[in-house]
Length: 217
Image 1 (cartoon, rainbow, N blue to C red):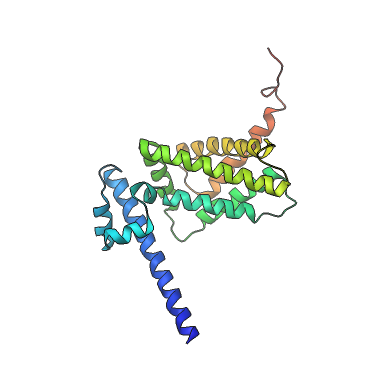
Image 2: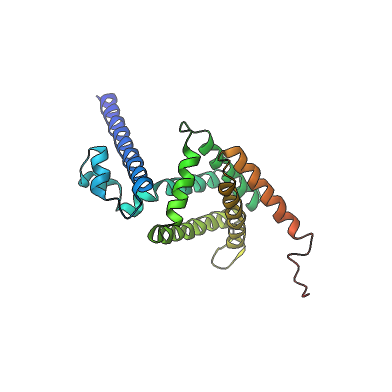
């Protein structure tokens, strides 16, 4: 009896996950075809053949479903960071956690993941309400990353600014690398990792060529 109940629970969970994924896919397809503002929740649920009530079981509204994939990657990153060995230096842990997430994206069953990521990134950046929400989420992610670095290093993030500084540095390099990657258009994870590594190499050279010197010219 317990095995039957467990199987039924597992089936329900898989069905719920399939419904959630179908709603995300339908929403993103409509956003990319018609635009965010022109897409309605009624159109999204009609594409999946579920009710509005079902939609709101999973998402608070259009904004949340539009950012669902980005939110998933943020959660993946935090999980990967928490899984890094305790002895790793903060920046090493951040870089290796990021590499693990990029690898997972590139090795997934959906070969169009990178193209979808790029198109949704462009949509978010071109839609003020989504851009504002994305920036809020990025701030929350940075706080979570800084809190995890502080925990790993045994410091208080409220009185020690180093966790926030190293996270800000990490994101700055990643943002430059991501912009370059999307502009070049070679949308695969291996090329992204090469671009990220090159950006970090340039960052490490800044201290050697005087660009970060405090001396006034």
